Image 1 (cartoon, rainbow, N blue to C red):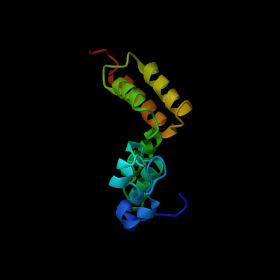
Image 2: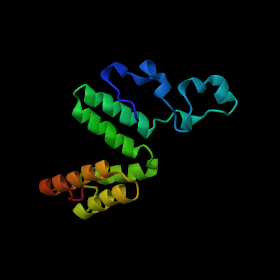
Image 3: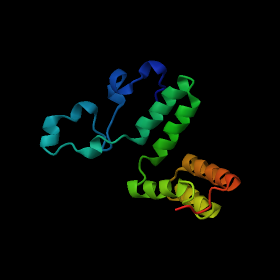
Image 4: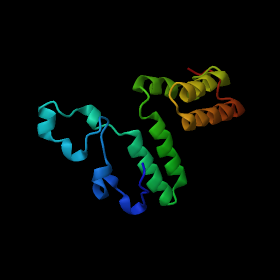
Length: 141
């Protein structure tokens, strides 16, 4: 992202379609029914990209919605993490599922080291602290 976006660029797909690309780099106008039928476009071209999520964060921040921007930035980090891994982490974040604080700290380390997701790692570390304070590591299920 080199160009600064503003609230006037929202929604990007309508206001600035030239900036929107799918997972394999195709422009929106290249993802057509004919392209799908010919096998020249597929599901990967419809997936949201980290870049698109970072653009949404930039616009949200420009609109004064910092918390929403933070969520988009974390989502950008997660966009390329395999779905199965996300579901494993999600399950451990449910109260009563992780045995102790270290389990969540291990998830945070994986996010940071294996997936280059420092914002998500910090989020999980914060959750580990809150869960410890509130006694949410007690196994329930």
